Image (cartoon, rainbow, N blue to C red):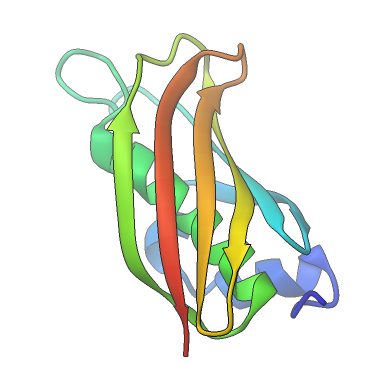
Length: 133
């Protein structure tokens, strides 16, 4: 059973996540075991000297998507670990992080988080583990 009664309630809860909000990340979809979040790619805001999206911006997007999904599963949930493999350079204008629950245990949960651009270019693969506090 989802913790948030609606996506609007989740958005209201996460508006206090100022780092993600200042990065321009939005919660686009949320249901019991998954979330989808996105962030526009803006040159000079979240890009590096080579013009690619900064790794930290990609990580922040994935971390926020994990937070939305895991706290919808059980609130509060905090991150125990997050592993990342950067796969390729985004070619589009928006990054999309899609989460999926892999394990929902008594005290921990595990999520896969895939980050792609709107063109379907695979950018990064994350695995996040949360502790249900």
